[in-house]
Length: 106
Length: 455
Image (cartoon, rainbow over all chains, first blue to last red; front, side, top):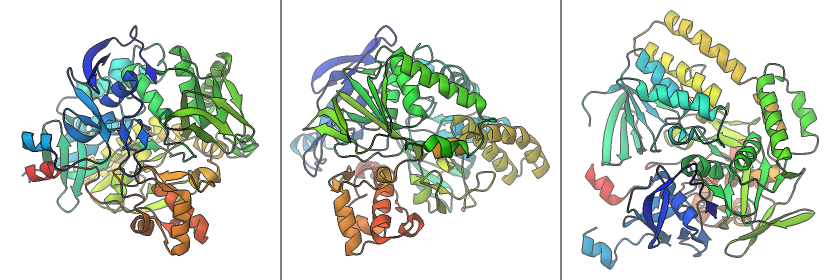
């Protein structure tokens, strides 16, 4: 779990983490938003379903994979937040075809 | 394919990449800088434009780091592409395949400079995949990029200057770590002193000493000679244990130094060798950073760990050599301009042999003793499975990948490659050179079929 220091870096950008609004500083990444929101896991592994949170925060470990604005398997530590960004945990592997993807033609 | 190749494409906007860009653009070269991060700085000066005023982040970060980023931003004519990932390179034509905020793009350059920096050495201990366990660098990045600090009791484990720096920064940010479990071998200091360089590196040494003093004064306890670290918990971190002790904690931050990020360099097929002092792979480079391929140079920590001051100098040297190779300056002019950089480089590297000896990771950091330790975090392959594959005939990490899928997940072996090689080397009685390095392939980072189709 991580805490903000709003007196140093005001939380000005509101994003949705697993559907819940969270305000984070400008320049923070989606991975930081998940840690600040206090989610117990950002993804479940495809192999055993074990919970993970970001480990390296520098684009190496891929443990921060998340679904961002509807796109699965994004490396959330390399994606800066924008107002209204929707961040959902990555559950297992990315599904190539599912109903909502089909509906959006993705 | 873009019709007119530019002079120089630089991968990475840390100290090496920024310095190279400034030097090359100053000599009139057309320069493109590609960087995965949304703002310049690399890892060491991450988010420096946003966070330089944070009282927890004073010193080189706020001064030299901010100044370098300012000069980089102010340099006219630079084609700087943040939030952009390089995923493929055609070295024949100098074509780079990129993925940026606006989708895919290609770019051609006569010369390519890899300034991809360092990554933290993976610290595979039992339980290190539990939520709540992170690398120390990750916590520092959260502080720099989001002003965030760990909540609850924090324990640091491992060794190296970054742990002490982070302890001080977290203290200044109002979240002092409770405990440092230091893994340095007893007696390492004596051996390190004999490596020399203490006089020439005395300024850096003094800075390190002050840092350690401040962290101790802030109340951080230190356990020395820690062995057998384990992260404890079920589904989430509950605490940490070691031979002779245990304690509860909400966050465990691991660090055993940094190693060159050689993923792209290895995928390009550049010659590498195992650095027995720094215990990592590094590309074979000449004194200008030129690699075994005549289109590619490497600068900064990606070519061997030297720290940011050294990276700034090797970046400038690679830029000078590029200008020379492209016929913009003669050899004498290149050498004349290089003299000052070489002097600063030597001074920046003075303390390195001492630090390499003092903070050499223990053998079980490279090859974890406990067979239940997960080594490949993506595919969840344990040390025991790798040892078994080695006994069955896997002679190196490339074979182990076929046996076990270790290194086949999304990180492509960035985390496990060296550990898998070390486990095989140990089991089969090979050297690391004989076990070899993973040979990654493009795409260097996963891309979607849709992105591929856009090209």
